[in-house]
Length: 276
Image (cartoon, rainbow, N blue to C red; front, side):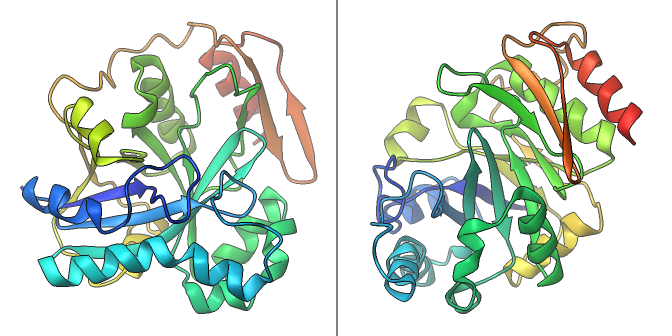
């Protein structure tokens, strides 16, 4: 076994839907043998717990408090804690890694970025973008939206949206794009992780010295080992002709191509290949 990292986690200090505070996760993950966690709280246009009316410096300060709480406890208990965030555009979510609090303070304009602008600016400044749970289907998700040109990796296994078809389609999508596949828990509480029989994550042969190591791994298209508890995720159980229950929309540079309702994954793949 290598070094194990949680890649997708929310704290109650910054995410409105989370229950556990940052520090509460540390002992839990340490006892399971995790090397570190990545705190990815819901950002400004997502399900944030921070009042958007606050001035930007104060908003950023409060947003980072869950991460800092976890980091301080991690330093005490020997668990590495790295910073990221999750931004939302309607119903599609993106995990951002590689930038820090100081960078956020300098870029208040980011709350108005499009998906394309987000990808361009994050990459230009040394970060990376991962599409979180791209094929999840719930009542509050009106459309499956895919942005093949605006991501560096795909979250292929998500413990918080665990259905075999969602994860299997995401893994196939990563392969179609030639991008790395990762796994994460989408943790909101240590109690919910226990009910799900353990968190997801990634395993690496080399220990990360900073979040930049994770960014470098993804940008260089290096594949990690997906850390998934036995029996939790059937990534190989996939039928490409199975239709999605929702409309799928594929977004491209400056325009978009909208598919019909109940597209199959093979339909999605055909649209992407046609557009190039």
